[in-house]
Image: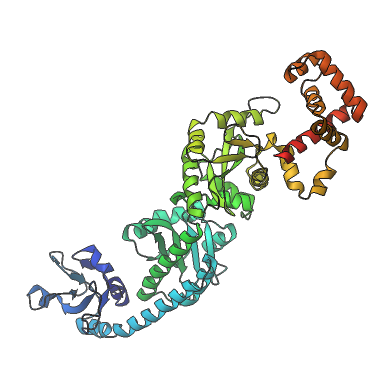
Length: 518
């Protein structure tokens, strides 16, 4: 048991420790300690202020004095060493009687800690741990990450608890509720003290315990408990602190801590998975990010090390966040993805493809990051509405399935590999076969067998419409040779490249064949 818990269980008023860290000391309430007792534990002795002031009682080795100063601690007192002055409305004899009852409470705490640890061992996700820890604590629980996103809730919250119901409905702590807690000094107090605080919300007429979730000294989120089904005691506060430590291990293991501690954006995660309960909540949460609200966006995914684990992807995500200003990133189903702003339209028509290429190509930090870490980026088609992020992520996933896609440096664009994606997603050979014009397939086979170049010539005719000279130059042949080949294309394969349908069939089939060969 910590000394802070002892003070809370005794319902002390003011306290004055010689050193603030004494309140977090692990203490014994019985003198039976020896070689088997951890060396950092202190034996607590209770005494009167006058006995301590006169020197009749002092703290020995591995001892801590809890000095009863009456209803008020004298202003001229000066505790030193392992001494904590406390005030209490009861007389010393009554306080001592309460103090002597505390060892039995230690046994209760140890039992509850064991139950909490077993709840942790038996939990495979945060939701399960929240449910089991709520059963141990006997009160409703809300677990949040650093982005104020609700990771899990457990227990029955009263219907008239408007703050809790709002959180449950939206899946996030609203700015209004968070601002109230900031204004009350609750959040700052918990961060400064590094222990849970029981506070009464005047606005909602309800008591809450707020505990920060830490892991390796990083703030992972919050573990909040509502006082509803049973009163919260000092033992409960220590137990809640213990539960928050265990929650931190789970949150870190599952990579759910959020963008503020380098674990990816919870907002983007909910965008691509459809996790927002309504558009209002989505807009509100996007408003607290640094993502521009005007212009277009592109979804990017990244590949590099094969069978990369989450730690590797998180490190790459942090590099992406530094290289691409104002982007959001997260890890979704083992894939690192980023929502990247590509600016406003600069044309009356549609310049999104060109603008996206221009923005990404001009980003030297992104290019260096990809090159130096042997990474490749896959870019979706640009889009204006952020709620389409999930569909654009699917485009990136499909693009990643294309063998050896066309790329500009280390960046592959969906629209430049559209036919390759179609070939990749078609699945079986029979499905790919249905997509192909068999005249073009026969042309391809004829060229391979006879060493001719009819398909290449037909493709150049499509790429340089109405300009035989440019088409012939691209093939590095004489114009007469070009015209000869074009006549043979029509004669042998019945493909009339003056007909729009035949030109479309040739272009589509040729690109699918090219993608299938890669």
